[in-house]
Image 1 (tube, rainbow, N blue to C red):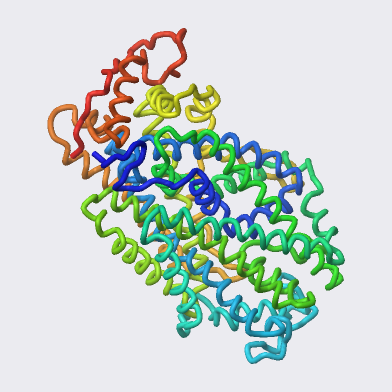
Image 2: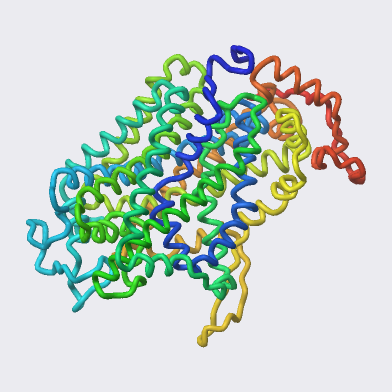
Length: 615
């Protein structure tokens, strides 16, 4: 049992204030994707009309998962591994979350390093070096009258394009050609991981203070860039492309799928970070208020970033004499080619470039160190003897991430980065999220869960969350609705298939980066990346089941262990007393369902629950 001091756990630590917690979550959820992905999705999927499916998905996917994971961490004071004391056979899902977090940070830390390199060039040059074709890295195909994604005369490219690929990345012809190590990228990656280590090695108290700068300062930068952007010629042409609704596109299933994916990956369920960050909250903290605040902050930031991005894209289109659609890109191309190209046309371009890349760096940095803090905490929770050596665990994790990022510091690094981005995360995160729902809603019982949370929050919980957790959210995660079109473009067949099938079908097609088609062996490497974390789930399940002793071993494996419940003795006693006074007729009924019909084969509950020691 943990050492206690009032409502605090001394051995693990707690947030100093609610604002530390909120800013940490905001820093984690609001990242570079809010700047380079969401605005493009709006443009692609009907402009302002895209907000309708996006807001719907926030309510049916984002908020329910956010509340589930945050409240479970708060109730049990557990990381993403030990939270599965509720059904120990699923603990492999926690290990899968740990592994995928580390693997994803290999390439995410590299993405955070790119703005550092750009920042150095911005502050050491009066004019940005990507605004001319007279540099050593330029080729005869460089053209000032070109955009990053429009090829003139079949071969010309922009100086910003050549600066990124030739100067920053030293890009080679493909994965097969490793090229030389790019030492500027090595140094930038080292700096990123060193800063992450300094932010997390002393634990959540330091994290809670650092985020006051890293989470808030990007909003200052966004505000400055917004004011500058909307005053540029052509800015409102770009903004209109961003916000003018096209309601016809709402009839396309792909638009709703894009909205669900954006909400799912921007709020970050499945990684274990929400569980771990919630575990540092005081036991009776009102997490319901956070469930509303963070998704609103995340959505508002995405929309505001869209105004910032499209005002500058409108200006770029105006200067090039072309349409906004011709200069609109997403992802790395938007952040490191198109937007810098537009900034280079401004007076005092180096200043605006420096502000933009500082903002990108901080947006990525706090997402990175909050996730790494969650990894470190989950490790010391799973192996408590490491807790006194947490600083060394943090150093080891950051060192592993740095060494992993070196794969992306060669001439073929951008191809490795894209290969990992396209293959290593999606399947694992989907499975870990689904297993979280299965473990707590269908195995432990949604009725038990509601009773536990109502006891913790000291208030009733809306039936909305009951319906969402039990039916709507699992269905939204499982089902992908797509349409096949005939030769005339009319929808002739609706398909309903699971996201897992969709994932496997997509992995059957060649992986691409722009016009480059990755070789067949890259497909195999992609599956290895994907399965490297997924396999933790069945492997642990098998080992745990085989190691279980006695009769009814499977029931023991899916029953709460003796360690499940509040960490503090005072809260545990309060919980057990509450359970004794509020027995459930059936674990799958809402605690307030007084008129619920009795099941045909009821599963009696011992109150308090009979503990079953884990193996």
